[in-house]
Length: 531
Image (tube, rainbow, N blue to C red; front, side, top):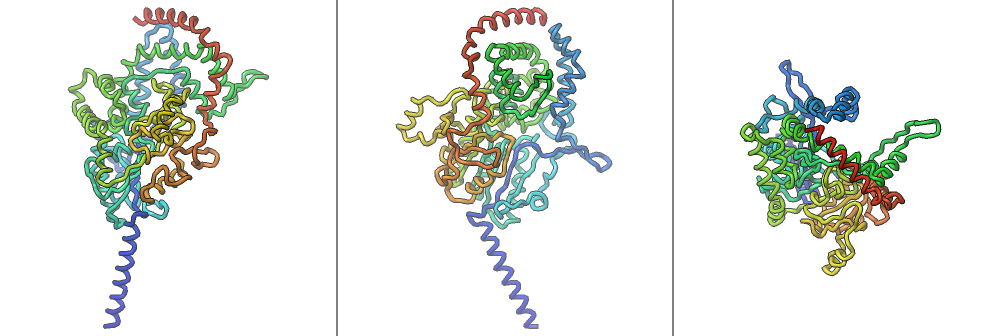
């Protein structure tokens, strides 16, 4: 019996030693558990009475759907152009978008009323669903209902954190967030002020807004000819359409046609005509469509830029403020307590011993319907916003030599990008913010994981710590790797920039008078016909 007891004691002691050692490894500084809070996109389902479920999201928003609508309803479009009565066209636009998103919409208070839910948004799924190896260390991916207000996801995120702590045996942890997930991370930092949260990484953050959201909600959409031509250089269409036996329309020839049209104001006029129509119909389309689609999601409202926020509320909820009082209160609460205070939230977190890092993408313009389309972005978020205030030039310009000389006098020229388009010194965290050129918002290539590993697992890692990961990096599409940025690196935007020095472009002022006269007569015609 003594031998049996001795063996059991040995096993117990050995198991205890192994458990303590394992826990100490997980809890050590270079093995911090990572909780990943991604952007929107988690599947949304609704339960049925028979026990099955209906998948509400993803929805089909492909260009084939839109093109199908245009083909099936071409007579409506033609009639609207000829009569300038766009009411039937407006109804069709409303119909197509609400058919996609109305099943997802929340009630007037921004709450779920039909039992729909985010897939895998279950605390017990920490290990079962979201366990991953990230340099051999636990990474846990939190899924959430992205339609909801960030505050409404806090209790589940907190429960998830506690579950991770229990599973790993580590009280300390890090949060890596991206896009809308950065808004949840900021809210979590402010609500819980957890001293065990040691590091926070913002990655392609929409914390100061996502351009397509704020501009769409407020109706601030404008088609810019330069942006359209530039956008063509960002697309990989791989087209080859035979026109005649000797002539084939390719991606490159289409770009050249658009650029030439832009040089002689042909593209300018086409864009002006679209903008002219949009200015007449947007108040019929935007409010009712948004209330039945994305505008019913408080989560999306967290990505509305402050410059558009008040206007967006007036556009979407104007005249219906009482009916949507609960929704307005919810989105105001986030905007006032998190959006407008986020720099203070970060400062307090750092003051209390936490570390904050930022990874920003650039080199791709925003949508060609954005009034800010000339600003550096990753197609969704502007560099100046996602970097918490870095100074940037436009796509057609660089920072002035005098500006850079003034920075040099202060010893801050080391923060200027090789292409002289970004000054990181004016951002909130100049020493812990990285910029990756040529990487668009929707591309989360795993090559960036190595940088995230450095940030999370090395103490006091900065943009000056490792020559392989300086402040400015370049994404090589062929090798799927990030390398130090150099002035000679070129992107699709740079290819467009070179075309602006063409022969026709230099003659563009000559065509200005014809453009102005033509627009004047068209404006008179459309105004009188519409009214």
